[in-house]
Image: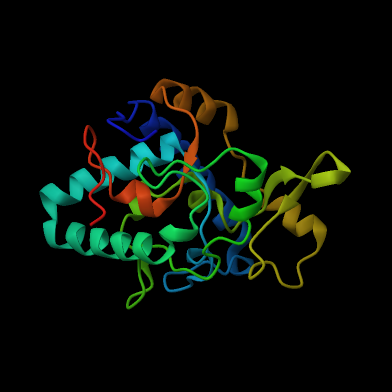
Length: 214
């Protein structure tokens, strides 16, 4: 996974739709939505990203290497430091960055790097240095979205725990953000890669090469 991936042209359409949905949900939520620059609680702890997210991050890093090389270098340094610190416990392949798919790997991931800052985060400013290319998980986090309800079956609305304090269920429901899962699946299929990784590994990939982790 992650070697030489090309970002599909339709990803721009997906990003535009998701970002427009976020803007609309934020407008409806108003002050109920606590998400602001500098609020970084959601920037701590590792989470899975798919091959489309990884390709988007790689595309962003290529842009930064060409336009803001010092920033790109700083991001890469944080990503290498992240891998150095947490790599020994990574439940997957350190060479490819692919997460393991066995049940034991998924169980290990539950406790993996839970307190770690995302290497894309500039902790001094509270900003994401790859914000324009961030994964879908980051783009939809905050407003209420439909999620699997778990063992009980069905779906339920979920939102950031810092948001909607004191809001009624009706108010939360009125601020729901629709997520185009079908379009994302179609664009992901165009990548031609399967499996999942994490942000730290994706940031270190240059399409067509192996990662430089030394």
